Image (cartoon, rainbow, N blue to C red):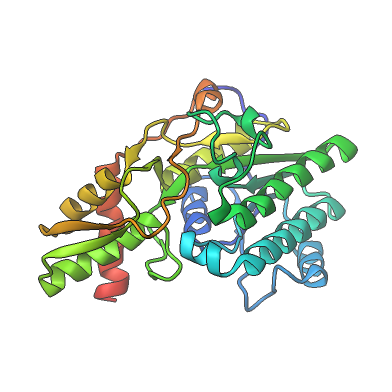
Length: 316
């Protein structure tokens, strides 16, 4: 393991967005570090409110920040709420990054998304593909906001020498996921659909699109481990891809979800719905060279996610 560039020991560490899937995984992961975790929910401040964010950061004085707060959702949410996805995310990231600078935060990690890369970027997508072509239209609003966050971190690093870094995870799933079919991503949506189909004894289950696009999925607790690892071992302006380095078709994913849930019916693919990008696979060579790789298999991750869904949505 490489030598630590930054130590979290005895530090005050703010996880912005601690109630979200990634943020909650970070809070769990940081329990293994000798640090004090700071959190602030919506009842404490609206992260879109610059004055409120500056006042809170000025009062709490975090040493390090994980910027995991964001307005997120799947294709339907992105298509139906473009202004919200662009405005909310621009304001959240700008307020937190600027407040970190104003209050001399030692290190900040900005969490982006693999949708920052061009729709037709060469696969697997390397960090250098950023700004290399048109974005996927179904999530371009979110992507533009995230690209702006990356650039803002780079700008503060270049102009002020701030130790701000960015991580770009692939598609995520896991404990604490959002299973609302109006706003969820593909895996939680498939889990919820498969469970309903199983419970109702349905002969088939609907799946958006053709099933042909290929996607890479990372268990959220693996992401949290990677983010802590990067916070300790990375300091540069290039955004770092975080993924498994492997992908599957949506059909393969849906079939695996059905096996996990125990639904034995047919899959009915709705080709009138958009597929999105034909393939999204991250090149993770940089992170692998740093000494980190994902540990959770898709089978194990889906089982943990479905168990959490049963406990919190079905039996909760």
